[in-house]
Amino acid sequence: MKNIYLWLLISASSFVLIACDTEEKKLKYSAFLESIEVEAIPVILGTIPLKTVAPGSVVSDQKAQISSRLVGYIKNFDIKEGQNVKQGDLLFSIDSTDVRSGILHAESAYQQAKDALLDANLDYKRFKKLYEGESVSKQQFDKISLKFKLTKEQMIAAKTSLNQAKSQLKYANVTAPFDGVVVKKLASAGDLSAPGRPVLSLENKSSLSVKTQISHDLYAVIRVGDTATVILDGVDKPLMATIYATVSAADPKTRTHTIKLSLPKLSNVNSGAFARVVFTRGERQTMILPKSAILNRSGIEGVFVVENDLVYFNMVRLGEIIGDTIEIKSGVNLEDLVVVSNNESLLNGDKVVIADSSNKQ
Image (cartoon, rainbow, N blue to C red):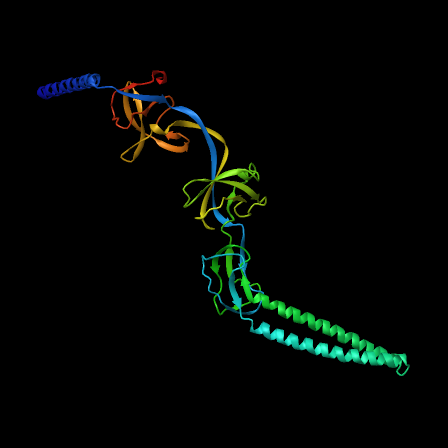
């Protein structure tokens, strides 16, 4: 047992001697390290905008479901989904056989009414002379006068019907009411068209806006004319949009309000695209650093913190970017001295000298 205790005592003494020797070597090594000149600044509090992000979608301000005013079979329906059309371009036609038949029938009725009016007019003139010569009674003359009046009204009605039948013919060809793109075909050639039954959907791509739902708290502080940032899929840069419409009545299910924001003309965005609308509501305080302080080492983002003229890599969690600065959510503390230049080649434990001594805390 005495031998064991003696061995443990010798081992412990050796470990202490080795540790002291290692620490002494580290101090001697750091003393001989070449100092790297860097710039460093303390972590400070800054203010960044307080933002609220709401999901939305791109919608067209000018859209229509096109249908025909006639009942008939659809033809000349060669237009394709996604095709751009100009105002007045032919979209489709309706078989006008029934319309032309109606015109012929109305023309026949009108001709008959004209002939009947001609006969009635001759009878009226003849009986008028007889009545003036007291050859017929007043009752007989009044009867002929009434017949002439009714025949004249029938002729006017027949002419009106003919004009209406002819006017229907212009609805056989359905044209685009505005410049736009065919979003969806809701029927096919040969289908029976009827008033109120959509045949295709048309939208104007040059008049787009963003529609989103926001909470009541946010709705209470925004106004028509305020601006917001819109981030669209497929668009490289955020866009500035202006609020032009708000709905005061809240959705009974979601308790949110609908608002619309105008967009500039975009060539590569279609209705239905996903959008993120960023509203700014005041400011908040947070730790900030220049973007030049942030390094990426093996996929880990961090900064070099100076302690006793040595630098150590601290992993950080980043937040929003504001100009040349970036928010630091965690990984450093206020007043920590962080290297902001000449930090690309630094390693843990490197000795540094601060170029601007006035920044050293």
